[in-house]
Image (cartoon, rainbow, N blue to C red; front, side, top):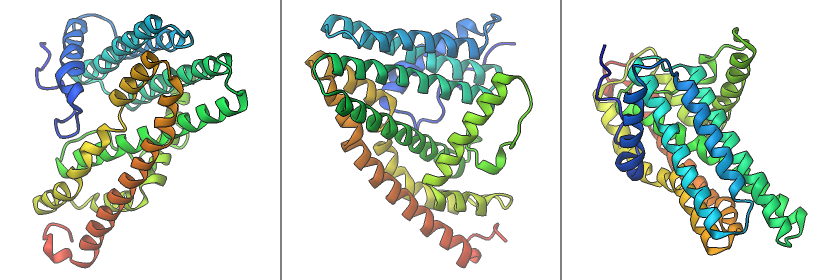
Length: 300
């Protein structure tokens, strides 16, 4: 059986410019090369993780060339991070555990990076409590920014485009999943992640629950797209690509703390704006469903 050729991206409306022009094209070539082998998507995820851990370690050194190598290794790590999901979609083996493992891998890469950046700052003479607080704020901001962007994009695919994507709500997940220790750990981490998203987007979650079981009329999809697609470009400013570019630029400039401040302050402010706009749109759409159901004939 030959791999399909139409699975190189999740949906062009939610993909970033650099993903469409670099990471996805390179990643799909790796995925197609691995398709006939016995290498699993989870193994590719681990390759991405190992390369990312080495990349993060290199940022502990105050040497521009070493930092450039670290940045390039992060790019390679992201290529494999793109390839693992594409390989899973080519084989039709995408699972929640795979998504959880991918998320754990991303978190570990950045946790490793932040610890190395804190070590770098303290050894550069920065007061260590201040360095620890800055790194903690940047790391926490990163966590919520990534969760928000992922939810907005998957909700858009699910409701606006009618694509069976990776959108889950807390009730979709087993409270006590079975399987191996690793699978149970992955399920717990993924459940906590989904709960965090639901806490960030309570009105959007309410809208999704209203739509479930009743179908989504095309007129409603069109209205949803018109309201929410204007927010998708803002997601790119909180995505992984911009984060790595900021890291590389700050390291080459010799001001690594600028990367942390960017995450902790302006990117967090953008997140607040994004959340407010998305939730306001979701509330308006939910009101339309609840009080004007005759407009959407298929919802009874």
